Amino acid sequence: MSQRKALVVDDEIHIVQVVAIKLRNNGFDVRTAENGAVALELIKTEKPDVIVTDYQMPVMSGLEFIENLRGDPETADIPVIMLTARGFAIEDEKKEQLKIANCLSKPFSPREVLRCIEETLSTSSVT
Image (cartoon, rainbow, N blue to C red; front, side, top):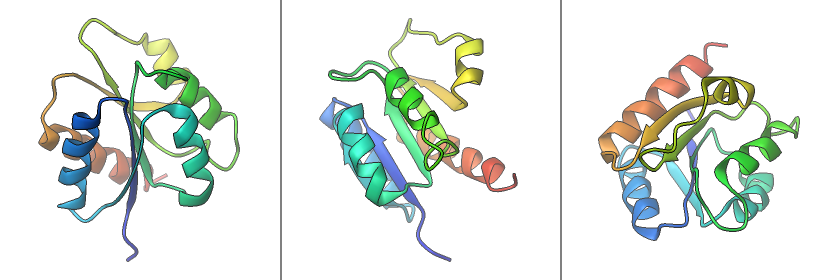
């Protein structure tokens, strides 16, 4: 079985590091980007199995990033987990429209992110 690839997109470097370390320790090949624009470039070559992205970022918000993903047939089906600051709820309608697999509020535990990714990947691989 090939190594699963994850892309972590967040402008807060400590969050990227914490999530990336947890995923690497659990067998993921992890790539990181500090904003959606960089992430979109990376995705062209990397083709991650799952993406963890922040909601609020400079250059391109998490929602704009996901809209771009969904607009491209090559990346439209990559599962996405959104990290949000407390108080930044995303309407269910928007989550459904953008096919956001899950939302986690900050602060979160790395274990929570890993569990969320494992659940997301196990349900998305069934389809």
